[in-house]
Image (cartoon, rainbow, N blue to C red; front, side, top):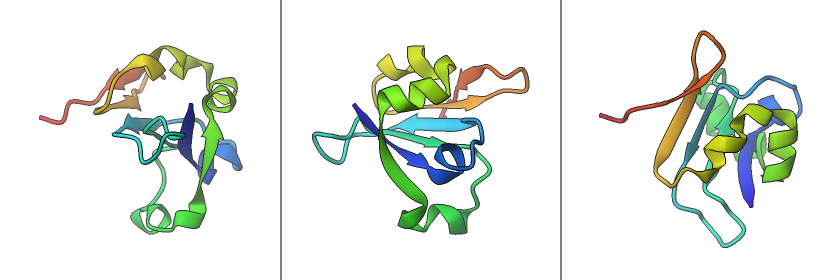
Length: 91
């Protein structure tokens, strides 16, 4: 399973603050998109700021997301003030 991950998390070591799952773009894509939550729109608009990673790499960096990976698209989670992930309601 692969995900697209912001380099803010992967290279700068920021914790995951927001993640969502959409329909995959390819057979190697899980549909998960992972962010620190601090990325600006300008940063997010630049494809070079994102890369594909194996899910195991992401879980190694952020073990608390493991149970969330079973959720089906579309779904989104953000980290709350206590550090736990909560489901984001699109309504």
